[in-house]
Amino acid sequence: MATITISVKDEVDKEFRETVRKRLGQGKGVLGKAVEEAMESWIHDEKQKEIAKRAMEMMNKGLYTLKGWKFNRDEIYDRQ
Image 1 (cartoon, one colour):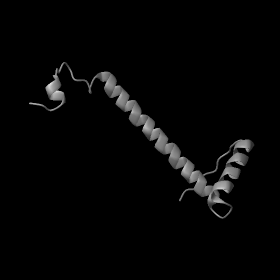
Image 2 (image 1 turned 180 degrees about the vertical axis):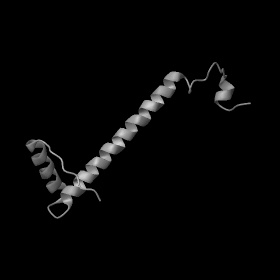
Image 3 (image 1 turned 30 degrees about the vertical axis):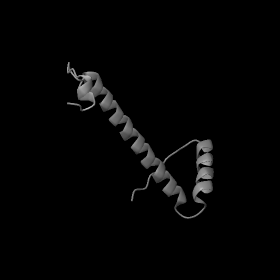
Image 4 (image 1 turned 90 degrees about the vertical axis):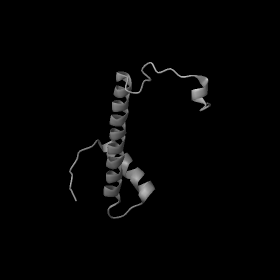
């Protein structure tokens, strides 16, 4: 387990602690639990942004285009 020392604005600290108290109550470890949850959420969001960015790059390169493939109505509806 890591120990991290950070500096944040007083108003951010106050609002964060109040939100933690309302959601998780008061007790040993609740602040650390909330910070860990916030960090995990931020990491997840950043990973999703990267996935979306890569997908857009692939789409812009044309990796998901039909490249001139033509079809008719029967093929769309699987009719023979």
